[in-house]
Length: 408
Image 1 (tube, rainbow, N blue to C red):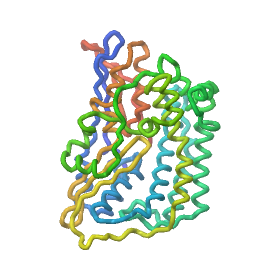
Image 2 (image 1 turned 90 degrees about the horizontal axis):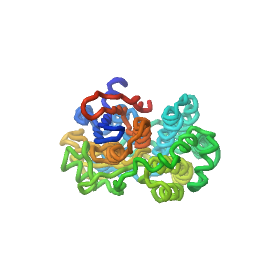
Image 3 (image 1 turned 120 degrees about the horizontal axis):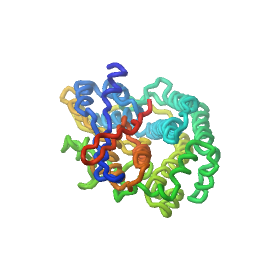
Image 4 (image 1 turned 30 degrees about the vertical axis):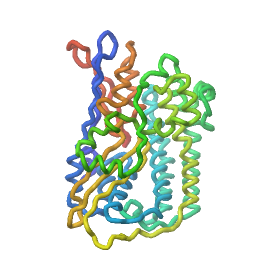
């Protein structure tokens, strides 16, 4: 499969807002992702072949996608790869830093009408690559059972420190603000694109917009996802928690963080709180990575503890920058992939009745409706390209908003 074909397989989120008198009358959000094409691409593959292919099928969060697939294979094969858990946590955190960093360097300046700064990402991405190589010199960290884990202490400490320094300099130009007042003072200085976007979103007329009564996705157990993905092929495209929508991502993880609590007390869980949660997420990554580094020990690939290579089923669940990701698969009698299903953060956050759709429907009228819709879409952050269109109720025709581009 070529890179172009792999990228094309990801799909798109389409947002259509029907407006009248400047107010949203209906918000329609649809996720179009060719899940069947992914399943066909993996069908008949061995577990190791499938795990090598999965990161190529998803241009974003390739490490998380690969690890979720590897963990599903491990569960199906009876492989205990727990010795690799700290290394995997480091890899996931490094990829989350890269994902958040792309938003800060590319997407957020664009929202402000500023020039994106791709050159600023080079140092961050070089550090992420160095960290992965310091863990698995053979670049086999995504294989089922784990690769040859031979951590280099100095080689790990250096990229972790570089990632921390990048976040401090490029996101905060100092420490992360501790509460709403500190956040407002930091934002007023405007030293970074993150600060300038925060200043925009702390405007009292804007800060609370997009807030909705959707609960966070609290469930983490692979068995919970496995039961639903196995029983209902449609769960991949239309996930729900006991029949209700749910949100996942930075706000779900950081709702109890002092900064987010302080912002939400003033403005609710709208645009300002969504951005505050993203900032809190980024600020927490260096500490998490340092802690994981201290737990990494050399390890070899896990060996199956099943007596025979009987076919099995398995589910892997990981946390990405955008939220929770689950992969489920079933092996056939020949030990190859017979069925594969996945549910990604986009399917939760961009569900037809999910937090993005409800937040868009609740936007008040005003001449800047298109801008506010773009801000909410950007902060909910679909992991595929997203098109947003305003259409006058009564058939006046579509009014396109600039398309939100996904990171490369």
